[in-house]
Image 1 (cartoon, helix red, strand yellow):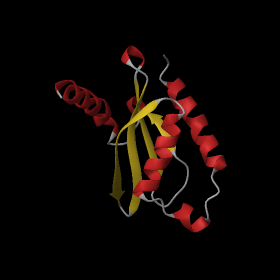
Image 2 (cartoon, rainbow, N blue to C red):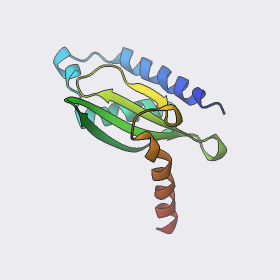
Image 3 (cartoon, rainbow, N blue to C red):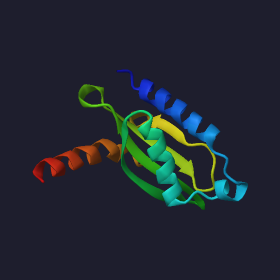
Image 4 (cartoon, rainbow, N blue to C red):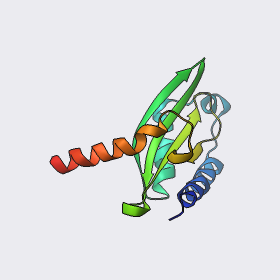
Length: 121
């Protein structure tokens, strides 16, 4: 499976979700951790994806919500990075392998660790 296909499918799901939202300007301007999780979960539901983890990064006064996700299984599994400025805007989706976001490097490792713990439980 081409790494770009899950991103394109997720981008389409995000575009539909964004078009359906009618948030007041004040609410759209400040995205809470809970709202970011909702946005990512709704987008991933459309492509049978799984959120691995999420965090907020604050650098030089610019806050950003970041999540790592996986789509597919086995050989067709792809890791994605989803990011959204705390101040609002569009959800950005990119393959972890192509991302310059520092979180991208730990997405696959985290997924592997979670699978080992699940198997041991």
